[in-house]
Amino acid sequence: AGSGKFFVGGNWKCNGTKDSITKLVSDLNSAKLETDVDVVVAPPFVYIDQVKNTLSDRIEISGQNSWVGKGGAFTGEISVEQLKDIGAKWVILGHSERRHVIGEDDQFIGKKAAYALSEGLGVIACIGEKLEERESGKTFDVCFQQLKAFADAVSSWDNIVIAYEPVWAIGTGKVATPLQAQEVHVAVRDWLKKNISAEVASKTRIIYGGSVNGGNCAELAKQEDIDGFLVGGASLKGPEFATIVNSVT
Ligand code: PEP
Image 1 (tube, helix red, strand yellow):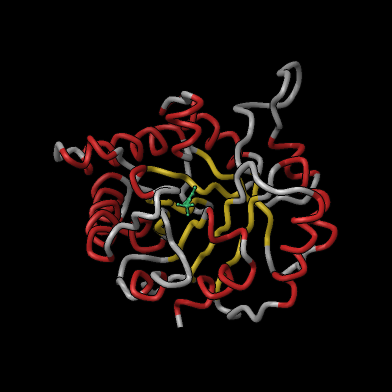
Image 2 (cartoon, protein in one colour):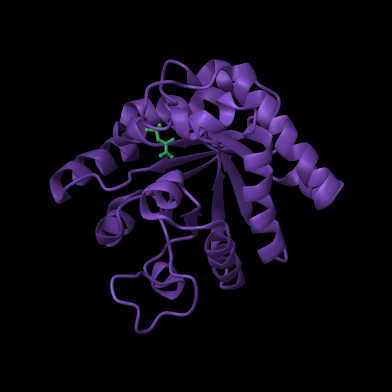
């Protein structure tokens, strides 16, 4: 980890029931979390209110997606205004499941980020290459193109956390090695330095996601440019998520 405040997000995806989430919240409330870490969870929309009303204020809430502009006649969508109204402080945008399963493209994701930021939500901006892209040597090109789409759309990086999430590592149990992750994080920071500013490059937290768990987090957290984690599967288990939050020490 670098000098910025460590940031750990739990992406619950489309998982959980009222009962399982009651248990998860209670486990999180009783977990001991290092004070010097930003901790955020992203429940499914329908449970955000339940989580907001029962989870300790120590942990902030994120949406897993948001509509690209002001709410209105957009059936099935959730607006930034609604996320704010219900107490969310963050939104995850550009997650690989939205890019590659749902089909969202770079420009759409960039516009979503710009709108969420303009309304005061923090954005967890996800980027990452697919396996065939890594194997054909395109990892940096793909990440830079996705970054550029965010950069072209937003006017400030103050409220953005970048999540590097190689698609081949998400939900597969195949975590990137600490060196593989560090290499991309350095490249992303360098891209920010060249294309935005030295200040943004040094201030922006770049977190890693993809099969992070209680057993591999400590080695990853030792890397200089890994400023935290975005955690899927392991964030559904309170004690393991707490271990990941505390991995920076
Ligand atoms: C994610 O979806 O953001 C993620 C990193 O998932 P997992 O930890 O399950 O690989």
